[in-house]
Image (cartoon, one colour):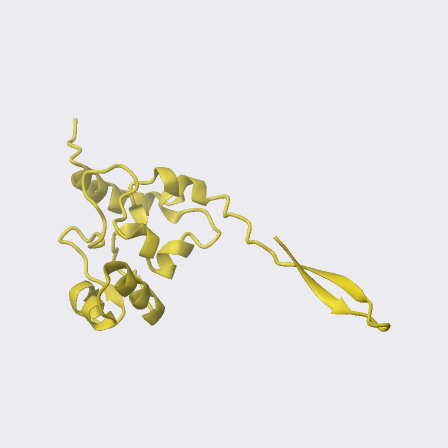
Length: 145
């Protein structure tokens, strides 16, 4: 994206000044997110989704309710979402293979930024995948063969 500003030169002649506004390059690892059943949407021991005041306000506008009502209905403690019995985010839709986030357009920044321009840890760490896979399979209604 290029922004053009008109600047006056020494003889009051207009000069064109161009400034380039960098658009962040898409994370090459996020392509997998489109086909993921939501591995990062499950709370594992030692992990926390940090929900900011800005995130809460975005959700309030999404649901057309007050910020305080978002906190009361959806937050556990001061800064994280409640989770379902299986440890998944309360906004994760069961029974779907992808596009499972019911608040995708209003999701918190931490969700927007994951995997932080790195490879998804659930795809490269067998220990994480082993913890998450049974939960995902259960929510999808997958039974063992």
